[in-house]
Length: 89
Image 1 (cartoon, rainbow, N blue to C red):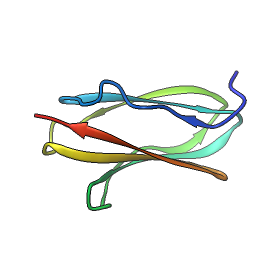
Image 2: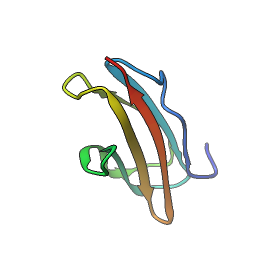
Image 3: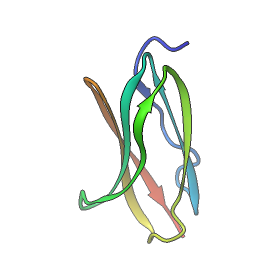
Image 4: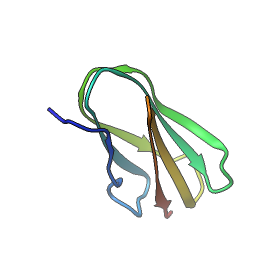
């Protein structure tokens, strides 16, 4: 059981066409995991729901997106973290 919120680096990174994003939540929480493009526009929500405490791994298939830098943000209660990833086609 995890005791703190944590957003890990995606893997692989750089990636083509999909990557995995892992995160931990210490207690049941409303969780959002959002992908943004380099301009800060929301691309998609990979997670938008109440989750129980635990470790999670989500895959993002970026087959329909162009090469470039993207950001993923985990939002839950008082925790927010953002990390960068690179799609190379």
